[in-house]
Length: 131
Image (cartoon, rainbow, N blue to C red):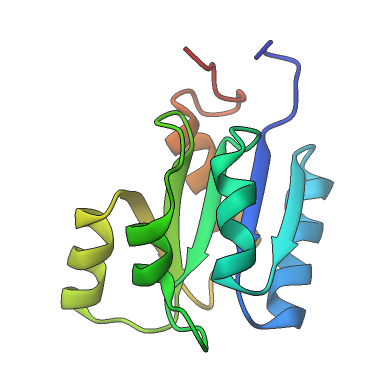
């Protein structure tokens, strides 16, 4: 990816209003973002290789974030970040075991979200460079 290309982010969260707000924030900051309600629907998108990041909610009906992380075969370059209001050390540790690179606790600020994307991109203020 060239440095002027937007960061592509998949937002997996069952709460429609929250999901839409996060997508709107990301787009306003120059990223491409798509919101998905169900883990099962997010799997083929995450496996497509089109996304730089997946923001993964933990507590969702049907299939939770752990189920998603266990079942998705995402490309190594696609980073996953846990986004949850469910603060539990065991859950956070399990999500790290299955590949998340960081986490945000809901509610969080717009600045927190953008800071995490920049940090996990590898160079603050710049989109990630894919290798």
